[in-house]
Image 1 (cartoon, rainbow, N blue to C red):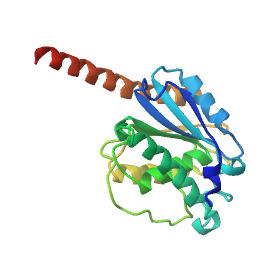
Image 2 (image 1 turned 180 degrees about the vertical axis):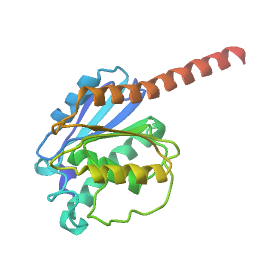
Image 3 (image 1 turned 45 degrees about the vertical axis):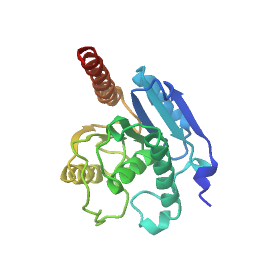
Image 4 (image 1 turned 90 degrees about the vertical axis):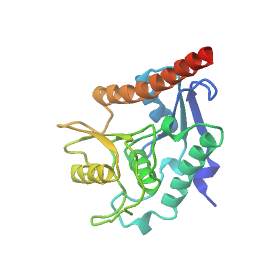
Length: 227
């Protein structure tokens, strides 16, 4: 039984029918959906629908993210399934992946990155706040698929106690190899948090999706008038 699937998902922001961007929001270890949704409030954009699932006992997997994968199973697999189910719910209701953003902080950011690398395609973007790909030193991630220019933001401290900056550099390199466009920002002496510059980057990424949707709507309206 997938214990994470027994928990509730919290929804925030625009309704599905009105939304122009959709954000899977993954909280950190010992956090709750309310905490990751504080980031949504700080971003402060209309037209964005957020889905924030709750992890069983507030953690997506038990050990640190660079432990051997088997030490975090079956919870890592359960967590990836939560991501898959939410994205499937959206896409089956007509939402293209180009409008979907994967966002997470800390453990949730690691989960977002790991889901994406295992399921590469053209997303609206990734917002990886103090996180990186999961697995011990020397892990080789499958070299398949392409992100087709997906924007990937990676922000972290140069001295975070949970996420070694070297793994963030490695994560960026792997995403670039898979066809992503990355924006990596390393903040000197930053605590384990999401700073205002990262919020600005997130807002800019989401505005790009919203504006693209508005431009497409205007183009379709103009085409209909000319038909």
